[in-house]
Length: 342
Ligand SMILES: Nc1nc2c(ncn2[C@@H]2O[C@H](COP(=O)(O)OP(=O)(O)OP(=O)(O)O)[C@@H](O)[C@H]2O)c(=O)[nH]1
Image 1 (spheres, rainbow, N blue to C red):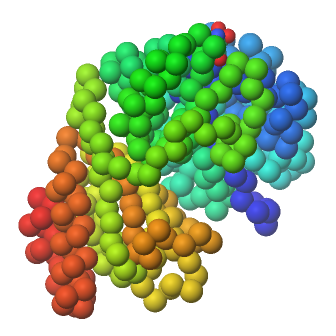
Image 2 (cartoon, rainbow, N blue to C red):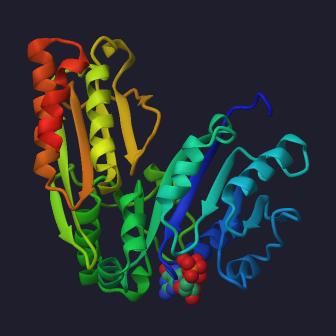
């Protein structure tokens, strides 16, 4: 253990062949990954990406243009701990950020769960952004047929469209519509095959379509996924919200795919609002942000599967309204929320 500041962990995901390895290799070659340790998580045998990048495994960790690259065979927790130990022991070049490239068929939710809930990793890491690459040539088909691809979109903070050089403008618009319907939270950006822009730096990327969060619904081959926006016009009692959220996740956890928003907490207005984030049942630590909440209260997008999102919105509004009216302890609200969420 060291007293160092937590290392930021960014996650690069995307379905098979979306262009993850190409992008990482390009960034490393351009020197854009200096101070970053790249961890390639590949299950395939033989490990093609590792060969492509000239990697030789975590123990032997090799350097490429100031960037530490290493590979893991699936035990990500052990690899991260090893990497942090090596850093603390001065066995590898210092780094302040880790970039995990997932396998093409990974569901990032389990990876994120490891990062935020493992007692050994949690104090030493801070979750950065999840960037999901989407191949413009195959987006509608892949998203209709592959649930891992949908899970990767759901987890994304930024969706980066690749292979724009091979797709026409119609494909871009269609992909924006399909991806935006699955995850209205994510920022949508394009990435050309020669682009060396840091894909995790939202401000450096050219905006494609930045929309205000809206409700949406999409049917994939496997599931009905829909989103809704929870809005509350005034600061929210944290205990009441936390009770509502834990009851919702307890009852519908596997189907609450993603939640992200901003909320002003009653009594803490002077600290600014907090960002609320969850991927599946994993709720991230709320973080204060400098920007004011749009409406001085709460605006939270929820992406759910197989549940009418109106039901979630109604339960949120009913629970908060009930708490405000009665101003009672949260136990008084249990029958109310159970009736609404059940
Ligand atoms: N034309 C074009 N080809 C690309 C682009 N990005 C990647 N490719 C090609 O797409 C193929 C797959 O790219 P990879 O970088 O291996 O994709 P990946 O996401 O790492 O694939 P997996 O490891 O299978 O998950 C390679 O042949 C790349 O050269 C792009 O923007 N345009």
